[in-house]
Image (cartoon, rainbow over all chains, first blue to last red; front, side, top):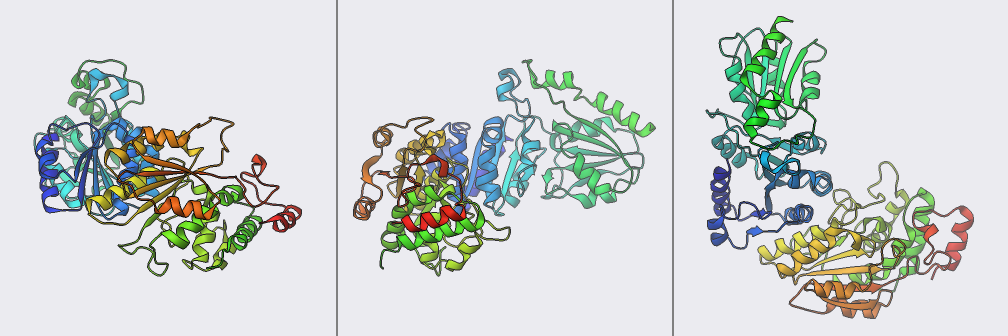
Length: 293
Length: 256
């Protein structure tokens, strides 16, 4: 996804003179060509995320389209007040593209983990949140929304789905249709959801946007009232949307997500996946339990 | 135009008394600077406040909003009568300014240390667009405690934002917490041109504002918090307080 991010943004910088890329001293080598081609609009802004976000708001006031890129905890958690006041409150457009989703940088420890990004950003009214599942999907979703005048967060992850889908911005994709339960899979969780549901008569809905949330597709594809929510960040961020969408119908919800705890182990993201149950076997177990209810 | 500062101070005191809100001393501290900017310096049209060729002013210490509102109203960005509604539920004028409500307000500020980075972004954007508009930002000495002030100072000098001028309202109100010392020298150390002036002397303010440089410029304006109301000057009890009926009469009497 990071390579695609470079390609997509390079192409946008070429076509759209309003686009300005700010790097938090991350991805500098990848954007080497862009630095040469667009020296005025590609800046290694430095390691000062709060001011970089504020500065980006100033660019936006000026009619430019900022794209800020750095590691998730610094872009989101460190700069949350700037994202709220300078973009959300002021109703300014900008693009915030993170790497290091959840525990992608497992070996670097908790300071570099960020499973809380989506939950925090959901509390900023007007903020759009996008989790592409593949590089191709990122390209499509970013091109569609980068200039829409809204603050939009794109979460790049190391984990990708093996197949791209025909994603549309803010619209869920029906991957599979069945009767016994509905799986709501977010971004890179789709792969495990498909494996877990193999040979089971269930619906799989694929969400690449948390906000705007596609209520219609969920409402029309949740006849069983049994929902399995698969999220790659802190568990349960989408629970309010699910309950609100399906109310007053009674629903049973099972959830797979990152547990809210400090993940103090190191190792690889795969080892963390195993330790918190991000496996197709565990998802299938939860799904079967839900179906039996 | 005749110097209307006494009238503006009356309007500020009145708005605060009526609403039970507002930071009067902070507004009085910057009123001479604001008036000089809007009367003599800024290229900005009240009838078209978002014109492409306008100069930008950002009040980073947003709690001094009453001062900005009074000056904007005097310059006919909106009717003076709006000040009567200050702080009310449906008012466009709140304790901190909102760019989506108030004509002439460029940035919604309030949390300290936000307006300065935004102003650096506006200045950088103008540079990218090869425009000659100027950007002025006003911060407080207490606000200088915030790390984003110095991050933005670094950014502005690194990117040669000579179109940016930062005015520091140095009224020493937060010396009790953290003394900022020689702010002019600090800005110089960050690669800026800087000078020190009397922030209540209109000629000094004007001369400092019109100076040109190939660097970003900091104007350290020595000010008195609550300037022009003797009972309020440098009196921390007044920081965020509206006058009682008795205090209201005394304040109006002593305004200069």
